[in-house]
Length: 94
Image 1: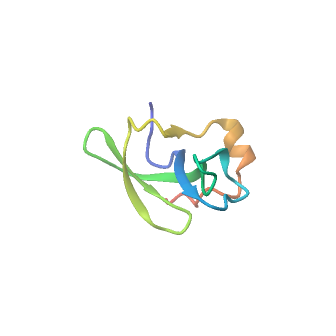
Image 2: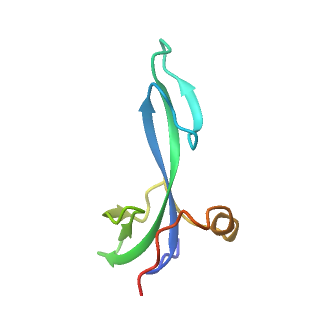
């Protein structure tokens, strides 16, 4: 996966709750129906590269997280994703 500083990435974050939000995808009920399992796409920008296989990303609220590049939930944003989510990615730092 080719990721550079300034690249936009999408992380599919797994979640569990009794009330999935409007951006929830892949919603499935638990065994007894009390809660749901689902994923939410998180839209982040790469702000740094650490170690050979780790990146630092910036969230929409300004938090910085370190992720492994080989995480199966992480992928680079495609051109269609950039158009679809144009206002939801954090600003790219110069």
